[in-house]
Image (cartoon, rainbow, N blue to C red):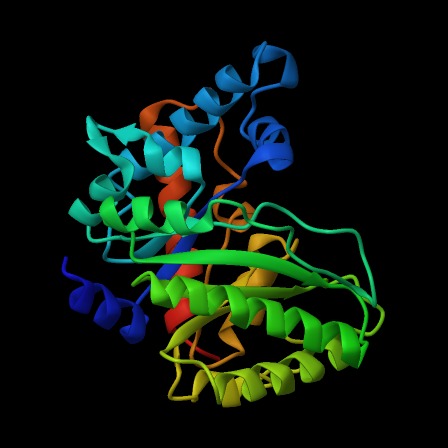
Length: 295
């Protein structure tokens, strides 16, 4: 796929984006969910090797195709690895799946009700390397825990600042200012964030993507979905179980999924290939349905 073909595929939104980007501290939890306990590795290299095996098994599965999975977000080590003898981004492209890269380095401590992104040393070099491997875009996450205008505006400003660096490198950023679904002021967070993003979109140099928590009130993000500088709005599952996440997703027009736990939650290392492919296929079908068939 050329960049133009990838852009058109994402804009059409006939499917969803798989989030395969657990990294660092979240990797042991992801492996435990997959049925591999923490004592199964003795070094970080072995741990990351195990998570790469899981991701390679997903990407190699006949259930995982560009017909329903239109994109996949990768951790840096996954991008640098191989699937079926090919660089991971190329293996995805060959299956019709658009590759993205997680670029944030984790979260700062909470201030003004939000957690900003940590500094990203070497970002320019990473973006250049990603582009050389065929990666289409990036994803960068920060978190909103409480409805404070100052905090939400700071989150949005940082997201657009990093987004402009990504655009300058020739990639498409997914801005991910996640609203914590356990927040006591979640609905107000949704509206503050929507307004801050609309303000930022007026000055962005090229279209971006947005990855948002599903809103309390369906339709809250319609203005973002319709904005000419938004290529696509995608949603994280945010801790919802898959049935609830898919039901909430179906209530919001124009928004497709970018799920991780809701996609991978039923997969286990000890499954036969047939069992694994069936479980993955069932998850893909459900998330695809919530992404394209709206209530």
